[in-house]
Image (tube, rainbow, N blue to C red; front, side, top):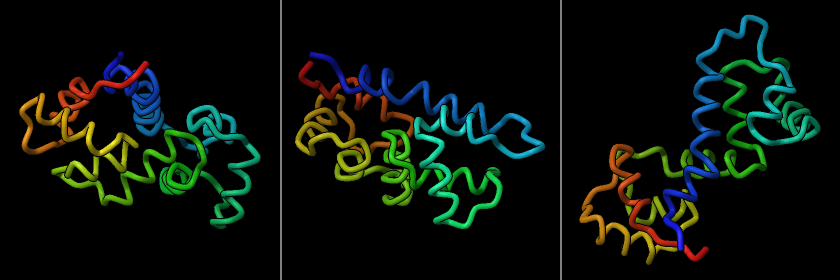
Length: 135
């Protein structure tokens, strides 16, 4: 049995860090389709389809977030669900369950084990440590 924190670190943490570093880098000429495809784990064809759908001529910091919000990969879907919940300062158990696709009961049990009444971005890793998943 592993914890959700282990799952999160294996499946999301490095991708989120890579996106953060990518956005902080200097991109004078915009972003390349290849780099976006690799970063968001979506095909170039999907990027082109999204660009047509949302009338994006060139990928910049703003349009990057449109792609991130609407892409089909797991990291894109996670970001989209986070936006749907309006990126709250305090997360409800329902927010965590919805955003991270964790059964609600597991979130409640994890919060109880971690002795957390309020979940924020500062203590969410403690919650994740206390959510146990079947291997």
